[in-house]
Amino acid sequence: MKTATIATLLLTATSATAFTTSPRISTTTTTTSTSLNLFGSKPKDPNSPEQPGMMDQLAMFKKAQEIAQKKKKLDDELSQETITGTAADGNIEITVKYIPPQLPTNPTPGYEASAVNINEEYLEGVACEELSAMVVEAIRDGESKATARVGEKYKELEEDMKGIMGGMGGQ
Image (cartoon, rainbow, N blue to C red; front, side, top):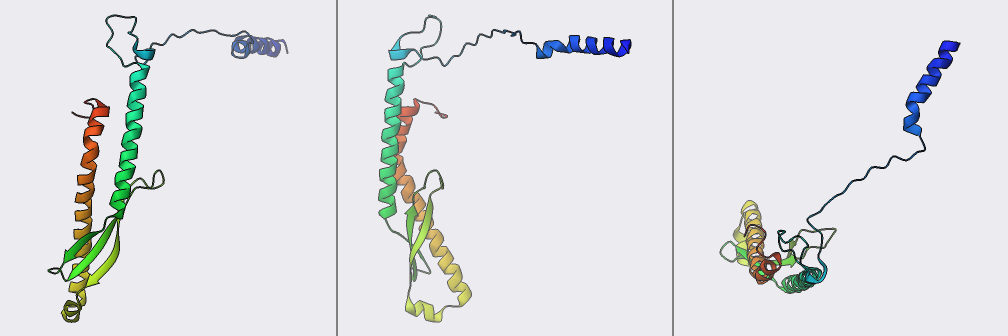
């Protein structure tokens, strides 16, 4: 009985540090290189690299908002355009429309075939397999033309993006 009591006391005494009510205070000092110098003030350390102040960052944020508005306007313009893909020497025409990304649920833009026009004379003399292949070819042609058109329109944003990135991104 005495051995059990002594063992219990020893266990309690050695494990009491885990449940002690006295606080353990540890101090950790962290230094970050991303601290802001508000309103463009210079860092206290003269050897540290120049960092943008709060006003510069606000200007960058405003520029990013302007670019987002331009992108939305371009997406709206592109969604109103109709692009025609053709196949079989122009006997099959597919009208393709650009579908802008629906952020955040669907961040990928897409294309939709909105109309199909097939020459009646061509339709009478063509086999089903060839017709199917030519419709697919016309859709792919329309999508590739639409992709090229989107790329042309987005070139307008490229210079703005280069300006806001400040030479970052592999420049």
